[in-house]
Amino acid sequence: MSKDNLLPESVKEVLTEESVLSIEEAIKDKLTLSVEAALTSQDELYSEKLQELIQAIDKDHTTKLKRIVEAVDKNNAKKLITVIKKYEGEVNNDASKFKNTLVESISDYIEEYIQEAVPTEAIL
Image (cartoon, rainbow, N blue to C red):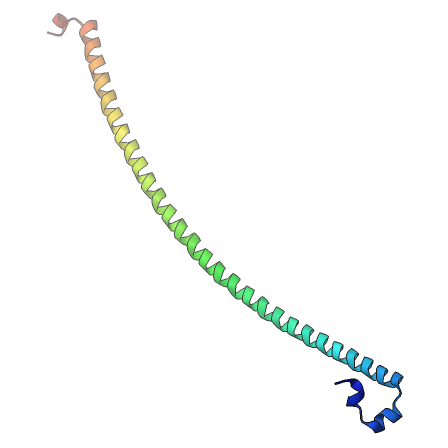
C-alpha cells in the first residue's frame, strides 16, 4: 500500500505534496518523541527496581556475612581458649617439675657441702 492510496481524493485536492510531507514529518517526530518518552519511563522504572533488588541483595549478604564472622570468631575463640589452657597447664606442670628438681638439687648440694665442710666427728 502506498501513501497515495491511503488518502481520499478530496484530501489529495486540498493538500499539496509538500503539506503531506510536512504532516508525515510531524507524525514521525511525534512518534519518535513518544517512543523516547516511553523508553525513558521504562528505563527509570527498571532502574528503580534494579536499585531495590541490589539493596535487598546487599542486605541479605550483609546479614549472612555477619553470621559467618560471628561463627568464625566463636570458633577461633574456642580454639584460643583451648591453646591458653594447654599452655597454662604445661607452664604450671613444667614449673612444678623444675621446682622439685631445683629443691632436690639444692638439697643434694647442701648435703654434700656440709659433709665436706664439717667433719663427721664434729657432729657426733
